[in-house]
Image 1 (cartoon, rainbow, N blue to C red):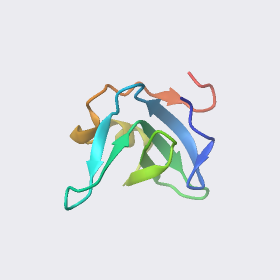
Image 2: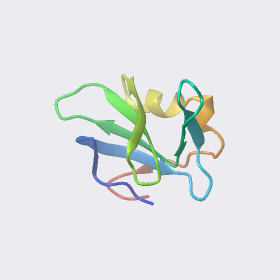
Image 3: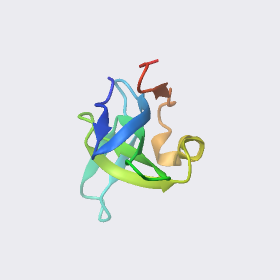
Image 4: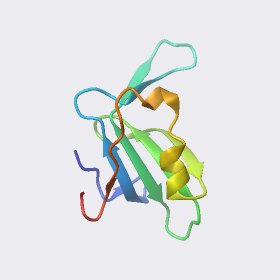
Length: 96
């Protein structure tokens, strides 16, 4: 499922969708709530030199983010908690 062009006002550069099984689960600090992560998006705010990796629910709503100096590191440094399904990254513009 392709994401919108912008997530939280940041332009999507690369994205991955897990399909029927989530990449992983985010739990609240006390463990009582959980959010399944189905979408990963590497995004950049206008005028920023850094990029963000947004971990999103099934509606592409951001659950967690991380800041990285470049796209390659944002993709390479994916936390173990999001490796239940292999991420197949796509460029947003082409959808490939």
